[in-house]
Image (cartoon, rainbow, N blue to C red; front, side):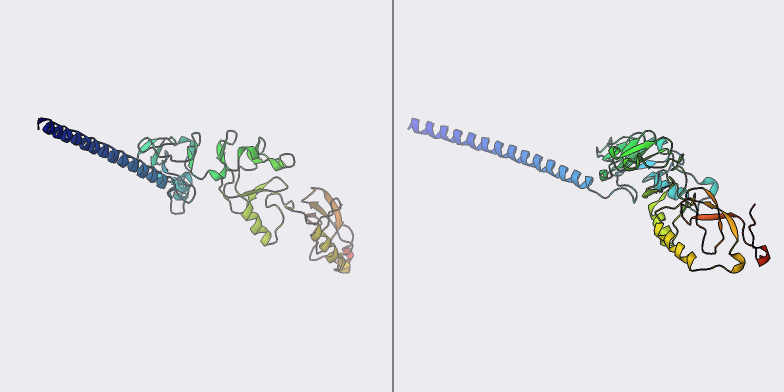
Length: 317
């Protein structure tokens, strides 16, 4: 009987210990499960943040800039410049943001103001997948293949391996035209001759004309839609116009001039080859004797409204 009671007590202690161990193990597993769930939620939250729609119409990023010039906060330097150079601003107060002088940025998630750096010191989020410490530039869209050019002093897009810097032009150009482009000193450091936007750091696509001058690609296309095919800066042809010149040859041939103008001679300057020629005056156009184009301008010998048949000889000596 004694042995039976002892055995029962021992069994109860054994099962109690098993129950206690199972309870502790269950609590430990529950705690571990909660920890894993928390980590997964944190990771999902971070992924949601990384894929969030932050920034402005110019750049996708997760920080704002504190302008050193006016101590105001903007999404990017373009937002600042558009605001501070609008027609509503007093011309005396208009100004651009000096990008290299930016010292502080504000995280778009936690609103923490901090020194310029890629990751937020408070929440740890990456404020820009592409980050340039020299330009104080952030951008999440790395498909642009951004790179920093020390000679230009700014960041550019398209991949550094695809561009070269021309010291005379003062800008980066595609390697495709490295051996053929015409150098024009500081070609990019001026306004577009059509829309007057500064070209050096524009966000719009640019084109280099055969003469070496530059302008916005969409401005060139708009110009061609209005049948303008010469550079707005130097008047050289922007494309091959051989077919047009042949048509003008035909127009000159079928358009005889009045008797009083048939021997009229004028001096012309060719905009394409820059040569001076002395040719017969014609109302349709004047053909360059050197390169056979009609992209010319009359420089001497303009016909007078009082011109008569008695004065039909050459008037350019």
